[in-house]
Image (cartoon, rainbow, N blue to C red; front, side, top):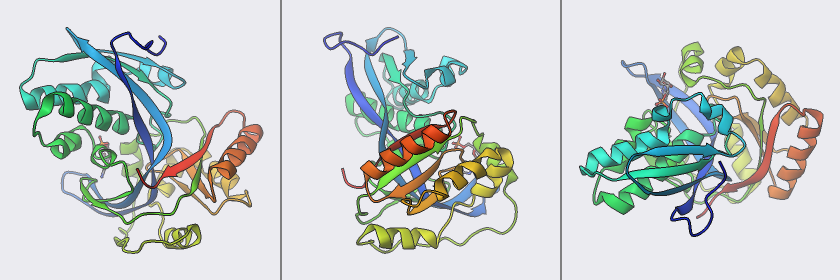
Length: 295
Ligand code: C5P
């Protein structure tokens, strides 16, 4: 499968950007087992691309560097098709879509790839067919990470991920991503978390430069790092590799892992570091780019 040619009747490409969690505090647990979070989501310039056209039945074709990782999914389990189905049910519509998904974001990697795809489809189909449907509710039903992915700008997520508070502008910064190629199961990581819950630390400031951003982040952490190391010990080596880079301002794991990120002064430094780490660890996936701080 290749991407659709112009003039082939497909709309798109629609960009579904990856996210990183600049910090993630687990602040409690609900009776149904879901955890309460305090987390700062930021989108980055790495994106899946999606094309669609009207069809008689829903159909999904996946292409791109991470297509193989998704082929184990039954097509119906893919969040993209679930998003189309949920807008159809909410609107009482009968539309169907043929969709091409170019998977550039590693799956089960803490980068919200599937959630970003689902959020992009919800917004697209709601705009096309939806009228006034409650996108937030549909998003949460698809997964706790989907509501924050409805927002393109940096956003604080609390509750189980559904309470969203936009944050004041962040300074521009570069992002290096390193993934050791081990998929990590989010429920398994949450199950391994033990001990006291963290405090929520309200993000009330507006850091004027990268140094103040990094200082504010250094007071926070990702509470899922330790449980994720237990699940996939290679994550410790990824963090060590990032921390050994003198040009890196902060290294941390994203979401429930296994991808770890580093913050740099700008995208050029991030690209150089990604290339250097890839050379030393040819079996790891790396990416250098920028955070999306304004849209
Ligand atoms: O909502 P989603 O399907 O993305 O979550 C996957 C799993 O991760 C949940 O079934 C739950 O075990 C865990 N989870 C959690 N608390 C959250 C988000 C996810 O415990 N806030």
